[in-house]
Image 1 (tube, rainbow, N blue to C red):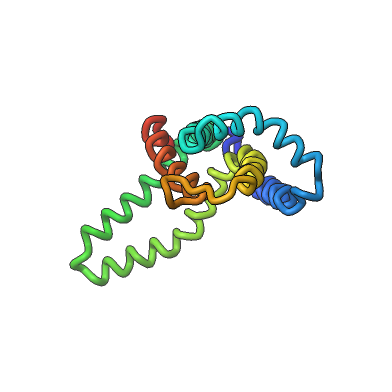
Image 2: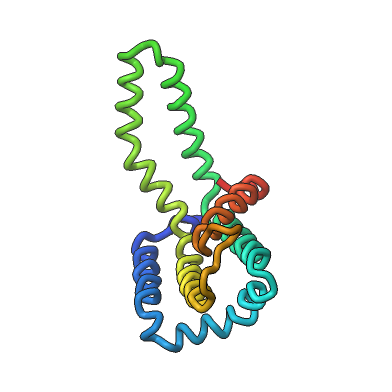
Length: 185
């Protein structure tokens, strides 16, 4: 990690990802993990879903979005991310400025292509710490969702969506709004 403790270690990220995948794969073979998730989520998230499937799911997705936004804000180096975005924006603006000058545009495009791998790795390192904090809880939550909704036949949110697509759509909506509100890159 860097001096600020905000840059993620790629080794730690890959270990957490491997552990998360192991939990997902061994869900039914490790009863202690499954039982822990059910003991934690049945009385909380399960109670919300039992109360009202659609509104309960909306509340759960909203709370997940708040959690991930807060983790993203405080577990990443927001200033460095903003600086990277600013550099990319400047290069894009230059490319727009020289759109009628093919030789200069080609030079700027070449520069952009050379910077792309480095920019990607910097961004990944800066944002990976948040993944370390959220990967295992999300795997447990998704496996629990699968268990919960597999017991209910024919569940469709808004008349046509599975729980996964409902979650996916509303987490994007909520996260977009919350990221703007909390000024998260």
